[in-house]
Length: 296
Image (cartoon, rainbow, N blue to C red; front, side):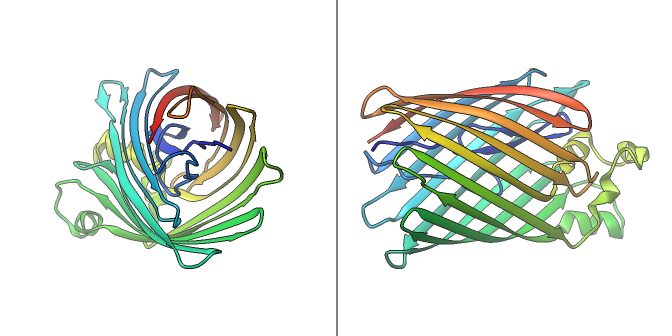
């Protein structure tokens, strides 16, 4: 059965943690191997109702010995009140099969805006497969840097970087040849109290830190969890995701619901689309993306 499952990018815009389902991921790669080619290349574009737009590209490799590799990059362009809040992501993940049931790997990702706020993530990968079940465990370490150009002990500490540790656990179940489910949970802890970046509690932050830093920092997660349901027809994959996350900065919760689909044009080409809505602190944001994939 030919099947391509989407991968996911976490995209921050308009002070929201916006899950824009395109071609990459931050905090957890959701790559399923393509069954009709060793290589798969995907390009995606997305937009939300605030006219923010994103572009992404992903390359995925998978061979018969279960060696898996993925490289990805994306850019999100967002302007609010004349401030350029653009951010970019790039990274990769590589894993090998230790035996018939266990995969081991490592991944790296860099996200943010290099002049203001960045997060570098390194994660390990442990995957376990048993009949219809799959479990992946990804412990990670992160370094969060805030560039201010100011002097003082606090600003120097932020520019050196704040360490963070976390873990993502995902469980997937293939109920039938056509239907599958998955659940995930992710948790992070930080070596500094990032609630200090809550603009609502400390409006004076706007005089100290750049709009980019304030905007991007709101997306630092305390935890997130969600569920994915998908069904495969003869040449069509359809599904839905629900995700809830909690900001470590504001303690606010964000709910995201997305419907997605893809169509196999032929043995080489695949086209897909996603449409979703997000609710956070009483505000709603709608977004959509389209993607085109080629395998060989």
